[in-house]
Length: 238
Image (cartoon, rainbow, N blue to C red; front, top):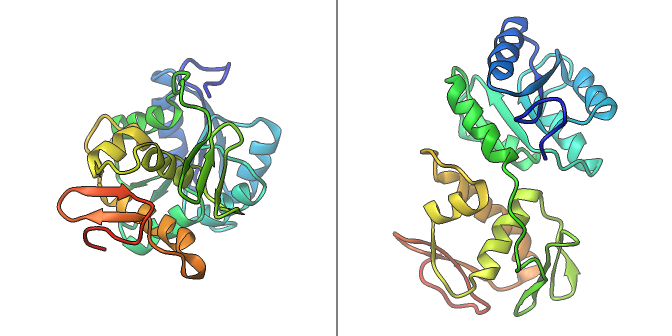
């Protein structure tokens, strides 16, 4: 949620490069954000405990503690603050590692400040109250948004915030094929062009958890279109 110190929210910028910290602090303040700075992973964790931010811009490569480890520790502590990860490497492995650690978005250096701002606004965007915040059930899947809890066949599912939101959208639209663009809009809230492989990545994470123990597939790929959640073992494609 938006903080009290800045109209856009309070951002913690974590990067061991002093020039990048200064540049982002100046640019984000000019765009209405309140900005705190940390020059490494350990100072970042300390800052989060002292004055929790609304969103974190987190560099992956730092000498004391990597951004991936910082993000992992935050999630292990139950901290659900949105995290935008920065990296100089546009490698699939780095993106996957950041997302698996609990990161919400990924931006490769160098980047345009305006794109960073748009991504932060998307992460901070508060959803209006909805009438469908009650629990939803599809077959053996039960999702309770109020408790932020999901269960499958009675067993709890350990989901990240983004995984939960994606699964909830699919469950509330069970039987309806949703395109990748629709899922990006409803889950990530982007209003600019982004890589749609983020959807495929998170669908693969969900499938790994939903299908553990030999359970049948419920999130199906409709080739050339998108994804659909169905409570059966059928489906078009894989």
